[in-house]
Length: 281
Ligand code: AMP
Ligand code: ZN
Ligand code: FE
Ligand code: FE
Image 1 (tube, rainbow, N blue to C red):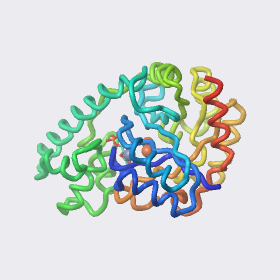
Image 2: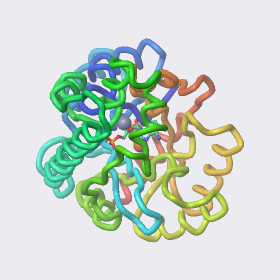
Image 3: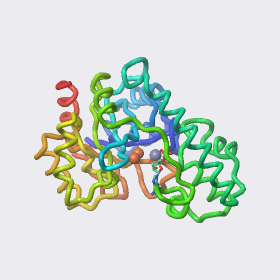
Image 4: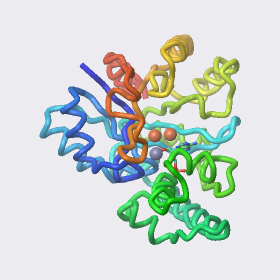
């Protein structure tokens, strides 16, 4: 059994259509995957059909940007079903906030002297779930930077000249809405939550008390010691240690499905632990 619980498709800023993500996951021998596009569930139906075809399990999910005491944080929500619901009904405003942010980024890039139009970015994203990686890809294509990573490092990353904030849910609201929708909230890639590794224990205590049910310990970018450390902190705080590659296809060429940067291994029992968390909602 092989598992990958953090995958993006063309429904947001991944490079491959949901059906292709599933097809590749099946070909790589994965047995359970979660599709976790940013702020939407638009790829779930297609992914689910693909999963059925290939005989693998699909957990519907999404990745939200939320505001918390440490600043911004990404929150994965698992078992969130498309259709109406407490959290589902709020996704539209997040998408609108993203659109407003994207228009501002396009303006800033123009002010910085780049010949990049919003329409070109929309085209790069094939019109769906537009995000910063699409801006980055246009900058690469036009020769302004050598790689998507360089576009983030120089312009699009937090604190860089073309960075713009966008509307986020408060983490307490996101947790409550997720749980009320039957979804399990999990802290994504904890190195980005604005807390130094020394303070993880305290942060995870606070988050667990607030209703978070897991943390993404087995993340592609972490060294084995960090994954073990995060998994043991998760156990200490009664949290599920989840994991995934954060696959984005051509928008993140360093990362592959199921294997991350080569050595990712998400323990298969993670799926059972997540199901148990779901049954405690
Ligand atoms: P957005 O949701 O549009 O703000 O874009 C977020 C996505 O951009 C993340 O999921 C990553 O794929 C990518 N990203 C964010 N920060 C960085 C960074 N510093 N370097 C590379 N990619 C990044
Ligand atoms: Zn992304
Ligand atoms: Fe993320
Ligand atoms: Fe992600």
